[in-house]
Image (cartoon, helix red, strand yellow):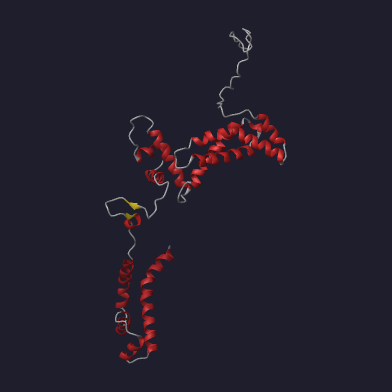
Length: 287
């Protein structure tokens, strides 16, 4: 018992006063960690109903400042503080509902529960596009490694090789994590690029596949099959597809029936198609 030799509140000198209890060794305490052991014991004994809901609300109110403190650790990461506080409050409610008073202090259970809820929010909700879990984990490992490697003032920006050596990842994985780190949000294709006086959108600067390439490939692939056709069938295909003649005009020029022309065109096209696609189908079938 410590004593205070100064004047007591009542004006009587030398009145002994009790010192504040010291925190348990190795336990970190905060101003927002209230003493609510009795409330948790009471909550565990109550059945579902209005009384239990009232005790639960009282616990949420008592521990909400701690949840707000944890949310503040994640500020300046692209999410508003108010939204982060709401997510942390949700984590607090989950922690209260799942906490077993017989297993220790509530703070030791609540802090990782609330922190995990906020981290899941960033992982699942903050990406403009759905990113695979593996890439998200690479992003986090690269982010932590870059922070650890630049802790010393004046440290240069770590290279992918340095990050790979620090994390045990390959340089390709570091590159994927870095790209994810720098691509947290998307850019609209209609966004204007400020280059020069003539503004144009990002979509105007993106290339697209030229459909004419497919036509060139198809023509080159069909050449050999066309060369192997009989001369009359080649002539019929030329008149039909290059001179744009009708089947009846072709029949009149060759002195055959229109039905015969139709069968020759179908048979010739099928033969050329089979010769072009046959080797490709054989390769696919062997895989």
